[in-house]
Every structure is written in C-alpha cells, then in structure tokens.
Image (cartoon, rainbow, N blue to C red; front, side, top):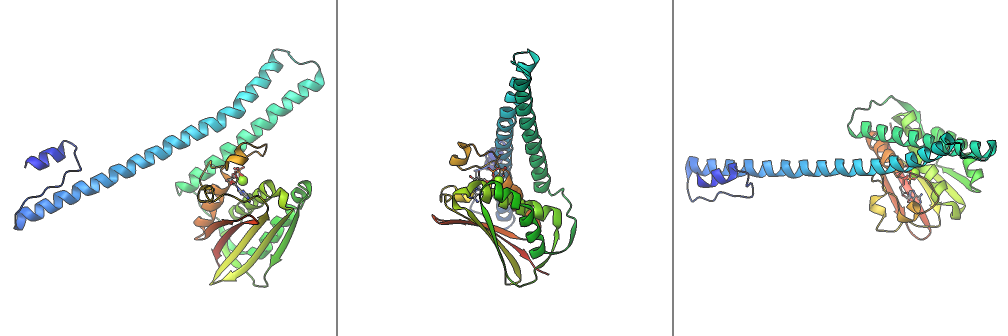
Length: 274
Ligand code: ATP
Ligand code: MG
C-alpha cells in the first residue's frame, strides 16, 4: 500500500518488491508493469515534444533570415533611399528572389509534414522507372551545362516497372540530381545507374570529389541538416531535400542509403519492382 501511494504521487521509478504469493503477487506484477509502461509513454512524449521544439527553432531561423533581408530592401525602397531606377530594380529583384525562396521553403516544409503525418495520398500507377529517370535527367541537361558538368547514364537492360506516384518519384530524383550538381561540381561527372537486385529496382546517383565525412553521413537525411561546409558556403539550401526524398522512397516501401569516400558519393534507392 505504501509503495503504491508513492507511485501514485508520480514516482514511476518505484518497483514494488513484496515477498508474497497468489493474488497479491499478481497484483504486484501488474502494478509494476503499468508503472513501466507509463514511464515509456512519458519518455516517448518528451522526445516528441523535443522534436517539435527543435523543428520550431529551425523553422523560425530559416524563415527569419530571408524575411529580414526582404524587409530591409523594401524599407530602402519605401524610404526612397535608392540612387536610380537601376538600383531600385536591383533591390526589388533581391527581395523577389528571397520571397520565392521563402515560398519554396514553406512548401517543402508543408509537404514534409504531410508525409510524416501520413496524411498524404499517393497517386500510384505502373511506371517504367528507366524511362522516367531518362526523362528527368534529360530535363536536367540545362542545369548540368550551367554548372559545367556532365551527366552519364548507365541503365541496365532490365525493364524496371514500379507501382508509384510519378510526381513524387520525380521530386525524389530531382532532389538527388540537384544535390549532385550543387555539391559535386569539382567532380565534373554525375553518373546515374540502374540495375535489378532481388526484385528491387536499384538506382544510384553518383558524384565525385568532396566526400561527406563519416560524422555527417548518418544525419544527411535529417530535416534541416546541412554539412557545416555547405552551411558556410554560397550554395543555398534549407536541408529539407534529402528528408523529403527519404520520405517519398519510404512511402513506396523503398530504401534509401548513402555512401561516401574520398573519391565519390553515392545516393542509392531501391524500390520493389512489379
Ligand atoms: P535543399 O535540398 O532543401 O535545398 P540542401 O541541399 O542543403 O537543401 P539536402 O538536400 O537535404 O539539403 O542535403 C543535406 C546536406 O547533405 C547538404 O547541405 C550537403 O551538405 C550534403 N549533401 C547532400 N547531397 C550531397 C552530395 N551529393 N554530395 C555531397 N554532399 C551532399
Ligand atoms: Mg538538396
């Protein structure tokens, strides 16, 4: 009785130890089990709360930075503190670009939240993955050229049919390609390969040069995670791309992984083939 009173007052670390048999023993075991379960729930709730707090902190920071500069430039314009039309246009352009970036960030965040809450519905159809990849890569040619880079495709002869939401899948592939371009510029080539392995379609996007350190590697799929070097560089980004890609792949019962050494960085995803 004394022990249960202490438990009832909130001390769940308590374990009742009474030397007894029969019903009393069972009662003791059940109470201990209830306390244990309650403790697990509390820990889980605290963790969820922490994740939410982290998210809000990150979002506030990422929203505030571009917003501060938008307000700054609009203030200059509002106070007529520009020399001429050219300068005015310059400021308007920066504010516009920042506002577009903000819009993108909010859309990404919204999409990610929807995926993580499982409130997204997939529009699935049978897709020829090789063909889809070819189309996305072709449509990226302009970006490869702009970055002075070259894409190389190496598709196996297997016909990889997957049942998937084409638009979501395109989004996942786009994120991987745009990363390979953003972070693999020194390496010049980006290889895109496909093959089949144990009934799974395997797609790899490979870029060369600059590796991701083993400290950063386990975190690159976390939302808002950016490798220090990228954070400090001119290369823009919010660190949501890979989190979105991972969610998309997993919504399709797929697996995504990353490998990186001094020579190359490989992002690989696998999807069940029909
Ligand atoms: P966003 O995609 O939201 O615009 P981002 O590119 O910074 O921003 P992610 O795509 O999630 O975010 O990537 C997270 C981080 O992982 C990047 O900031 C970069 O440091 C690192 N990274 C991602 N892809 C590569 C790659 N192919 N090679 C080297 N580093 C990479
Ligand atoms: Mg990215």
